[in-house]
Amino acid sequence: MSKSPEEKDLEKFLADLPAWMRKAFQQGLSSLTQGELTEWNKNQDKAADLLREYERKVRPIPEKWREYREICRKEYGPFARITAPANLKGRPRKDALVEKAEQLKKSGLSYAKIAMRLNKESGPSRLLSSEETVTGEQIRGLLKYRRRKFRKTASSPEKT
Figure 1 (tube, rainbow, N blue to C red):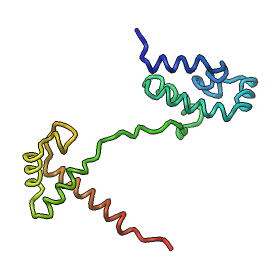
Figure 2: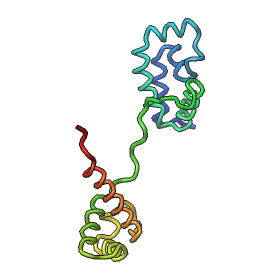
Figure 3: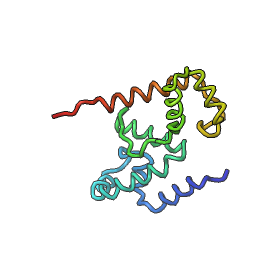
């Protein structure tokens, strides 16, 4: 079985590390001997930077990432702080859809009629990120969320 580019990159990264640091990253600090812990403490700043780099490299490899998170849970408990950033991709925003829907709602159309018009005019390719059509219930939810969000930011009192 051939290795992915991410796995090869991780292996190269680990090969360049001292053995005690590789052991700490892959097995946890509790696996280090007293001498290795002394080395860790002497090089703590460098080790912290390299640990962040290790987390960045191991995150795209699901089985390795699971192993790493499990080690962190065993070492530091269920609330282990993992320094790698969360996956921030998520669903794309539908600002263009919401703005058009707001205009149509202000003109007096119902949610269902707004959905029918948006699907007819723009089609799924322009305003929606997928090939699905928009429904009246989705329009209602998007507009409700937008109103709630706007109200929260607009009416928040200033602290004096």
